[in-house]
Length: 296
Image (tube, rainbow, N blue to C red; front, side, top):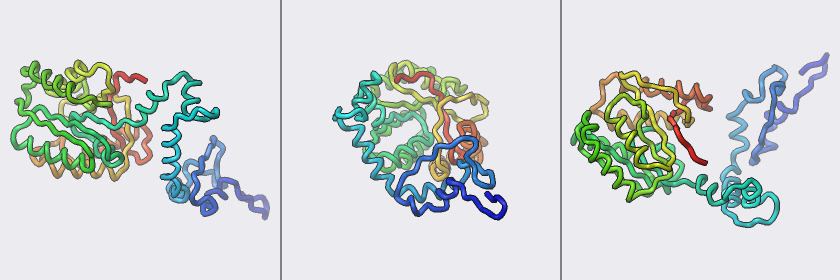
């Protein structure tokens, strides 16, 4: 900022220009509407990628320190994890379970298996497909293997119920889900959107809720000609790289769907871009779910 012949450099600009002074450190920036540089650019818009690159090197060690803090049962001092939990009336074990979820029950295909598999190798996944011809069954198994690459425990179940006629096999499908329930206790379940107008999808959603009464269930959306998109309320921002990998896997493994209007890279990108806009995702793309009930 220039006053006559004197130049005044703001503290914000010193921070960003002198990144090497903070190299290896994590820096948190608290700002308000007046946090601008001499060109009146807001702090949130100033070199976020460069700042992240300068201050990130110790991130892994800091994460490990935080993880150890969560795991410790040491109650000495006011800032111990268990002390804070007890003062707020929370059960430390319950909070830890929520922070360390490692089991996912998958019904369907979407971005989250890609993200979770990349971030957590200790996942246990149960991936269930109810309706498939022999050709579609082969696609389902190959795509599941690709989406879940690196996951330590993954079970893929593919059934051959007639496509489009699932409601008329409802009793058998319910028995299948009950069998999964007896064998596997998931922390989060992904299933079809209850308002999906495809009869097979809708039945699976209804029976999923009927079978698992006290689990976190996220309902995903599928673009198609029915026009049944709604207003999701649970968003998962994605990186551009994750989105592009998902799209590449879909196009690679589902050759039977090629040529259909709802199955194209530009459509998948458009849906992710809209959901990214709705949740102000850092890289402008996201996946959205319907969360009708969550217990904390």
